[in-house]
Amino acid sequence: MKTYLLTLALSTAGLVSFAQANISPAKKQSKTIAVTGATIHVGNGLVIENGTLLFGNGKIISVIADGQVPQDDVMRINASGKHIYPGFIAVTTNLGLTEIEAVKATLDFSEIGDYNSHIRSIVAYNADSKVPATLRSNGILLAQTTPQGGIISGSSSLVQLDAWNWEDAAIKIDDAMHMSWPTTPRFRGFARSQTSAETLAERTQATINQLTSFFAEAKAYAEMGKPEVINTRFEAMKPVFTGKEKLFIAADKQKDIVAAVNFAKKFSITPVITGADEAYLTIPFLKENNITVVVKQPHALPDNNDDDVNMPYKNAAVLANAGLNVVLSIDGYWQQRNLPFMAGTVTAWGLDKEKALSTITLNAAKAMGADQTTGSIEAGKDATFFISAGDALDMKTNKVEQAFIQGRAINLDNLHKQLDKKFSDKYAAEKK
Image (cartoon, rainbow, N blue to C red):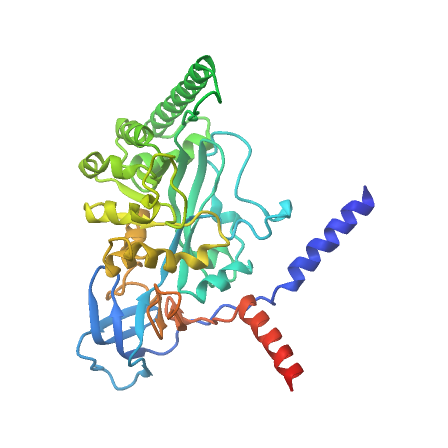
């Protein structure tokens, strides 16, 4: 047993040491900077040709359409022929809570138990993770690090991806409480008998009843003032009832989406629905209740055998074109670097390119209640953006040349680039 543990420890150390040394976070912005001549994609649907972006002390000072710089004592960056985008936001991801999927000790995104409202992902966020650097190179500069597991998983937080520790990384702490709506599994043919299906339905209803009781007790607890005995699970629910913290509910089926929204309405909460495979079947209902929808990545198979085979590609466009606030997401963490290209796919299936951009920028910030500080390139907001030589939603032309987080010019090196250089140099030397 000791030999096994030693071998596991050494192999884990080898995997970690194989990655590049941590890149030190960028220093605070010290001089006002003007980026001139670029096409600025604001993030709210507007595009400014030949624009000038002026920012200082980590904040955007102005966005000027005529390309003129109002100050002489500024550092200039010539971005003629290039594009400026707000930093992309990866939502509902366990980024920073997991490092190596095969090593259990590096997984910290799921807790034991069903009702974990007291769990806060932010305190477990690993700012030294090697993964965020690979995301920054494609323009993903912020992420909603999210707990998983159970019925109520806990609170997520919005972080920026260039930090010494979680305190430095935090943009909005405890932005949303996450829960999964109890569902009854669907079976076809003879997979389950009618009796088994009824039993499963009864179990699901029992879980919903327990969930209703939990919310009712938590709300009563929140309204009682200062309790004599602190209940940490109920205490964590207080911001949800006051509106300071959003409620994200994972629900895919039409019936479950409607049930989840109606459940939240009983407690005067307007939820955000995540997953939302069949949201297109409930559009009038979602619009009536002003529901934001976080849809899964379009590069996926249909959820049901009878669905249109292209529905995953079209889902975001159908919802957004109907007037809903739509956010695009990707499951897990390691594929998050492809987020902008997922948004690019959506544009090929019916959604305007600037609206597709909004699904990973401003719409995401609105869903988390962080749109006053980030999500678009507007005066007064954080100077979190990047400069690309081409279309950032197109994997063929996306080339992030410079990126800034709160005005700090961040290092775009990462393990992927280092490995590319290492072996390119190796084979180039062999040819000589």
